[in-house]
Length: 617
Image (tube, rainbow, N blue to C red; front, side):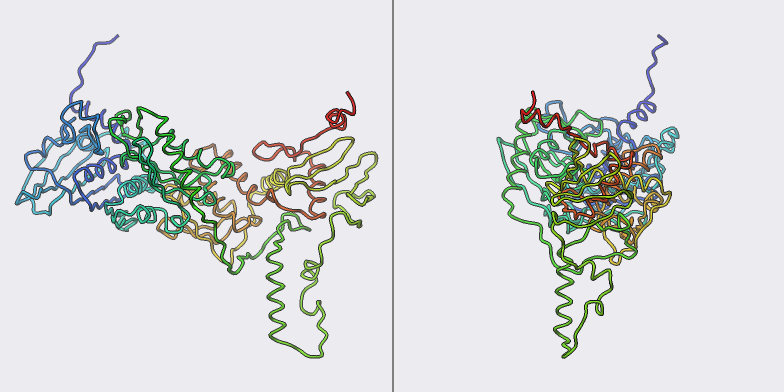
């Protein structure tokens, strides 16, 4: 072992700063928390260049007395506690006394502050944690802290910062959590001279949530107000139909402190069990309030984690609070009539068949046609269908034939004769044959082949077919939306999408930044229905955020597009569609599993079935 040295205070402060100030967002978090603890109800946060070159937090709180300014920047100096016992009754945001000392040790800081009892304010300047000056200053009650050139004296840490837009997005995420956690505080966020957020600070949770995520999403949420064994659970939870492809809209607070909690997350999501599809997550804004003596927030340098003395009580309180709110809500997602969104340049999944014919659309067109004719009567004129509609439209409106009606049909890839029975379509090819028995649960196709019964998952099959087709093309064909789609995203999602816009363009999307956490989608991949565009954009952003090698990232993005463009379960298919899909599945060796690894076909041989029915032993 080498000689043991005692580090100087400057080195100690810089090392400690690494635990508290990981990036500009960490400094902003600490400064806003100090403002809230000082009793401020108005806070302005301003940054430039992602906060690296400039951060300013101004509040109307109690301020710092002139004689306490030097103490405020010393390590472990705090006004929140005086002894260890105080930690058991802690309700303030901060308590360690590390924030100002850590921030000032790795940056240049200017402090302007005044208490209501002082006639004149004070301005102090520090560099690297050392005081440069301290003078009188005219200023209103409250505190303003300006932090510039963060990490100027620790270049090793500087090189680990991301680009300005990414750092700015992390700061915006911190501000959003502060707005949600403190609806009674008006918080304004200015980024490079532009006002990004301005919460009303009226104490209404719904208004705070709308400021961050938009009013439309609030309308799909239910309020919680539940209490169980001294634990109070309030907030907002999304209706099951408003689920998301990731957890970006899940925020938890314990005694007003934003935290990560597996207990709260698990309990809340468990309340939605059987109500959500796989891969979907509920919108959750949950506030848990309990006696501070039953919590320990001193388990993480950034106070992001919390321990509970009784995890089960917390779990039960959150679970029943969320579930009661969901069950007590009688709301059903309202679908209002509007003109059906259409696209130009639509390409069918297969050249000859469209899997997505909508009966309601057909009825609407028929009704509209009838209205036109009734309003414009022509006497003694025999109007023929071909005079009103094209050949394709007339063919589309032909009556649907019964599933078991005998008919003659052909299949693209099979040129050998086919014979039909009354109940199924049978294909004969040399000594091999298969017979389509039909569709069950509007999700699976039953086929008989070589003394086996095959069960085909129509969505998995079509997803794999789409993925193979997309993988073979370097550029995906896109379609121009007649009515542009507006997509609401979080700050991190917006930064991720706009920073990786080239990936979205290769996938067939044309996206523009509308501001206020909204994006406009003008083009989308050809086979993706309009209703699935938003979820596809969120899923791809989630894939990018999780990080992958470029080739893997591209494949996963294709998975998402292939999935969104595939026929879904619970979709009734016509005979032609069944025939075409089965033909590809049984003749293409590359269609064995979906892109996620689920099987496309399950086989049951005749012997297995006969044994199950005890026909053989």
